[in-house]
Amino acid sequence: LNDILDYSSNSHKEIILEVIDFPNLIKETFEELQFMENAQKLELLTVYQLEGTFYSDPKRLQIVFRNLISNSIKYQASKKEKSFLKIEINQKAEGALLIFEDNGIGIADDMKDKVFKMFFKASERSIGSGIGLYIVKEAVEKLGGDINLHSEIGKGSQFKIFIQNQNAQTKFNNS
Image (cartoon, rainbow, N blue to C red; front, top):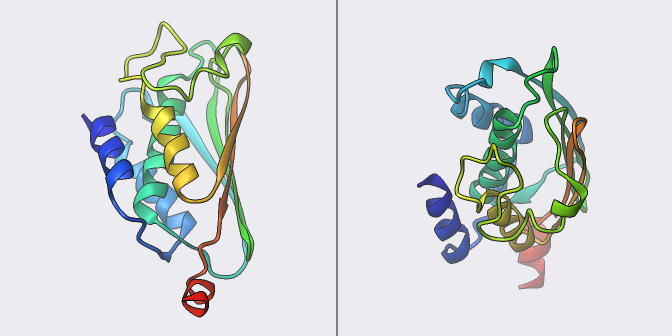
């Protein structure tokens, strides 16, 4: 149900620009997901390099974060002693590079080009709707960004996202 609401929200709502507080947004999203099965087994590691003020749509960013964090929780490698999700955010004047890297089950090479398609499930462990990563890609693109996936079965996945800074000052000056 949340996926369908996120899809509808992302598809139909205007972009609303606000100052983004990445550490707080990550914290709130992780806390929202703390009651998922096995969430307590996933160690969250964060690295922030934050320069200047960053403007974007916090609702869309939260959709992206919620999907990527919940996937890291769902697809932990149960045989590994320690599961982690490392989130790195490098914020600069022109944009932000967001890296989500986990040591979960990974995604097979022949599935990587399909995971961003609607209703696609890359694993027999998939319990969701199959639209989570589709929504992530759509939200990132609406924010003027792009997303890349690097993954290896048994080692984990890394999503690299670049999102443009929708600097309010620049937008107002160009109006």
